[in-house]
Each structure stands twice: as C-alpha cells, then as structure tokens.
Image (cartoon, rainbow, N blue to C red):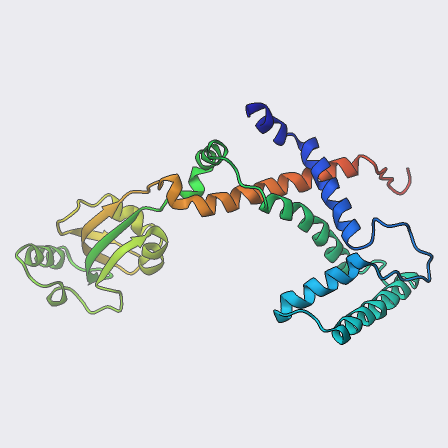
Length: 274
C-alpha cells in the first residue's frame, strides 16, 4: 500500500494518467479515429451519443428523432464554420480563443484530481501541513463606554468609578454611533469598527471587569471584555470537506505543472537575434 502511495505521488505517473485521459477525450470526440479528408465531416456513433447525452442533461428527457437530426445538423454547421475560420487564420493571436484552449486542457487535469479521494493518512498530513488555512480566528465580546476624543483625567476616573458601582453603560460617557456591545467578533470586525489595532489592545485587557481608558481610532473608552477565545484548530472531521477540496486543488495544480514541464521539454524557444 505504501509503495502504491509513493507511486501515485510521482509526477511522471500523473503525466501518464493525464495523457491517457486526453486520449480518451479525443476518442470520445472522434479525435482518436483515422483522420478524415479536409472536406469530410464524419458523424460517428460516439458523436451522436455525446450530442444525445448533452441534450438529455439540459432537457431531462431523450431527444426525439427530429431533434437528433437537428443536433447533428447544428454540429455540421458549427464544424464547417470552425474549419473555415481556422483556414482563414481567425484564431491566430486571439486571446479569447487561446485562453479557452488552455482552460480546456487544464480542465482535464482538474477533472482527474476531482475524481480522486485521499485516504485518511494523506488527508491528515495535508491538514497538518496547512493548518493555518483551517484555524478559526480568535474572537472576543466587549462592552464599552465612549468618553470622547480628549476627556480629562477626572472625567475618566468618574466614569470608571460609576461603572464599577453598577451604573448602566448608557448612563455614562458621551453619545456615539459606535455599537455599545460587540459580541463574538474577530480581529477583522473589531478593527473595522474601532480602528486598526483595537483587537490587539483588547486582548491585553483583563476579562470581566471595567478597564480604561483605552484608545481607539475615535478617542478614549472604558471597556469590559466579557468573553475571549483564542485561535483554535478544529478537528479534521469538522473541516473534512474543505480539506478534501483544497487537497484536490493542490493535486490538480501539481498535475498541470508536471504535464507542462513534460511538454515544455519538447519545445525549443528561440529569442530574436539568436
């Protein structure tokens, strides 16, 4: 089993599989058959089956005989126009066509990776190596009282004393459009609301007591952190679907790169003047 896993990780094996997949795709579209004369369009059973399958996938029913003939005629029309366009060189230098062709080739490798499911050992190793992608961010909940941009030391002391004595936050401080309480918020939300660096400041504040003054992007506050949770890595099972999707994406990228390097070796690139 270990030998098979090591073999699967070899880029050459990936490339060979890609090649096999490409040949199968060509065969399904008629590309694997004997080359037809330039002005001959062959309507094969494989082509009819593909047209029928596409029709049923869209309309959720089989095509009638008349509809099948219409599909075949549409294919013939498209084939003639494409061949004539290629003969005129209309594809040359067209960025849209070039991008579409590269996307289709990339799709072949992505499809192969999407059909592969890693075993638990492989998935666990990938999860641990990329744990930063799945770590849940730190969160906290905080109440605050806004004191203004430049409150006096006496005003800060009086507000803190009132809060510690049980005064309601709404009865202390100055009016503000800032939310009086932020619950279960990440660094992104806290810093977006109060200004950059506020989350880091609140992480240093004692939990469960009124504390201040604390500087934000708007002025000074007295704050009370009511809940705090550090960043945590969930168990693999809780993120399994995301981990498998990311693993497949990485495998597809590896397959594309391996295939490209193999093909790149077959080409000579000559710079002007050489």
